Amino acid sequence: MIIRIVKLIFKNENISNFEEIFEASKEVIRGYEGCSLVELYQDVNDPCIFFTYSHWETEEHLLAYRKSDFFKEVWGRTKLLFDDRPEAWSVHKIHSLN
View 1 (tube, one colour):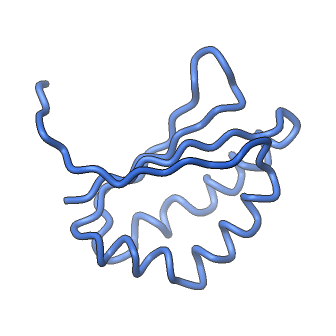
View 2 (cartoon, rainbow, N blue to C red):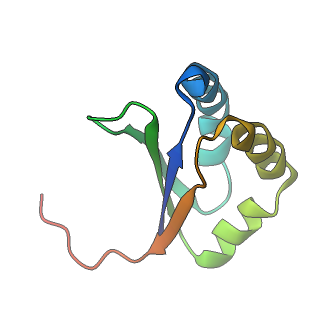
């Protein structure tokens, strides 16, 4: 499994626009083959910082999503709202304790 974490920093005036884009997109993203989880987090101290967190069966599934027309359209609208360059990581879970 691949876990994808993306840090997004928005201009304050663009937060609600991003939240609308995410709300409209989250179920489509979750419906992509290989995706089993989509979550959105917001920093407790800086409301302009968000993190998306998603689980993918394989890196190939993630790459297929990232090459999709849907991703290109959503990312094209989202990146116009940024205040800083996004950062992204693909990681493997090593340990989890619930």
